[in-house]
Each structure stands twice: as structure tokens, then as C-alpha cells.
Image 1 (cartoon, rainbow, N blue to C red):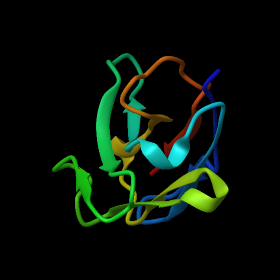
Image 2 (image 1 turned 135 degrees about the vertical axis):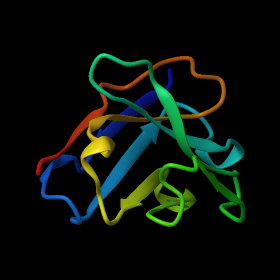
Image 3 (image 1 turned 30 degrees about the vertical axis):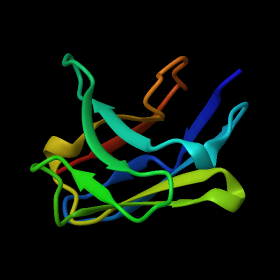
Length: 114
């Protein structure tokens, strides 16, 4: 049973930073890529970042590239998303998941207020 717990969200001012964590259990974390998604208020969930199983290749949506950094620690079954220079448009609930997307966690709220 895949279990995903996102944490680290909060309220920040524009230009601020947050580090999100995704703690996982119930599957072989190190065998799968990990992805970060977000759902802005009233909108569909969108993919913002991904990292391969080994942690050697990353990819980002154009809207967050150069500001967000995805990483992982396979020994801890945990993925991270470092978010710098946050903008109001980054306000969303952030989720992590692997490509099978069997289950979703509750996400963590990020609010960037001007």
C-alpha cells in the first residue's frame, strides 16, 4: 500500500523560500522516479518537477525552472522540493507521487502572499 506524506508548506512572502518533503512507504521507493505536482485554487493538478530513480536526472516545468530544485534520499525513502524566489502564482497544494499514481497523499499547502 503506497503511502505518501507531504510536509513543509506554509505562508511565505514573495521572494521567500520553502523546502517540501515527501516521506513514502509501502513500495520500493528507490526503483521509481518521483514527481511533484501542484493544484492551484480552482485549477487542475499540474506536474512541476520530476527526478529519476537514481537521482541523476531532473526535469522542471518552465514556470518553475531555475527556482525549484527536486532531490531525493533513497536511504530515507524521501523526496524533496526546494522552492526559492516564490511568486504568488506558486500558491497551490503540492503533492508528490510516483508514475503509477496508485494513491495520493493529502498534499501540503503553499501560500505566497503579497
